[in-house]
Length: 428
Image (cartoon, rainbow, N blue to C red; front, top):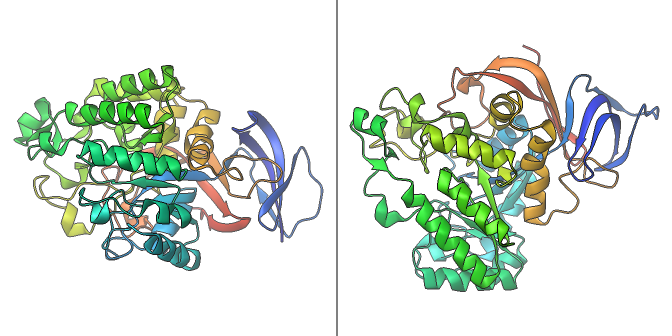
C-alpha cells in the first residue's frame, strides 16, 4: 500500500533538511521525499500547515506489563503512545515479575508485536528482581534485544556491583539507563525540599539526592567506558554535571521530562497525590536550568517517564500516594507549548530530542529521520490546534496527571508506524 503525505513542513534531524515536501511511503519504508510528488497512492494525507516529523521515540515508559495490568497493558500503553505520536517506546523493567532475563525480554517483545500498535523495546533490569544484590543475566537480555539495562525506580546503591554491571553492559553493546537517587538521603520525602513543602507540612527531597548519584554514575562511566544515559534529570547541578561530562568527551547523554520543564513547586497548590513524582517537581531555578540545558543541547532527550497508576493510588495525600504521572499523550503538546512557542527550542530541536537523539542512543539506524530508505515511523503534528488537556479522554488506563485542565498549543494529527496509520485525531 502506498501512502502520500502532502503539503507538510518536513523536519529531518539527520540531514537538517526542513521545508515543504511531500513524503511517499510504500509498505513500511519511506521511498521518496521531494517537492510536489505526483505518483498515485491508495491514501493521501493532507499535512498542510503541519510539521511532518520522525516518530517520537520515548526512552522512558512504564507499561506495567507483566503483572500490574490493572495500571496499564501493552495494548493500552501502545494506544496512548500512538495518540501522543510515540512510535517506539522503551519499557522499564520494574514489573511483577521484574524483567531480569532474556526469556522475560523475549516474552514482552513477542506479546507487544501482537498487542501494541507501536514498537516496544523492553529494557532489562541490572540486578535480579531489582534487589541490588546479584547481577541479572545481562548478556542473555542483550541477545534478546533489550538495548539497555536499568534499575529504574531506584539506583543500584552498591557501587562495586554497579561497576561490574557497567563492564558487562559495555561488553554486550548495551547502554545504562540510570535512575539517580541516593535512597539513604530520601528520608521519607515526598516533594521538593523548599518553602512550599514546609507550607504544606510535607517532608522534602533535596537536590543532592539526585546530584550525588549523577556524579557517581558519570565517574563510573568514565572508568568503564559504558554509554550512560541519565533518566529524568530535574536539578540545576545535574545539568552542570552533564555539561562537564560532555566537555570531557564522555559517552554520557541525559533526558528531561515535560513535567520537569513545564511545572515547578509553585504549581502545587495543595497536598495532591497527582503532583507526586520521582524526582519531584523542583524550584524555578532548576526549571530554568533544565530549559537552558535543552536549548544548548547539553540535555539530549525529552522523555515522559510515563507512570500510570490506579485512581485510588493517586487521589490521596502525597504521603500515601504512589510516585509518578502519565505522559505519553501530552508530551508533544507540552513540549511545543512550553519550549517551541516561546522560542526556547526550534521545531528541529524538538524533532532531535524526541526522535533522532533517542534513535542514536538506542542504535536504531533506520529510525529517527524523514529520509528515503528509513522505516516509515512518522508523526504529523499540527501546531495550530489549541485544546485543553482532559484526562478522561486518555487512551492510557492511568488518568494521574497534574496537567488536567491545562490549555496547550499543538497536537498530533496522525501517527504512522511502519507505514501503517495507527492513530488519527478526530475533529472536535
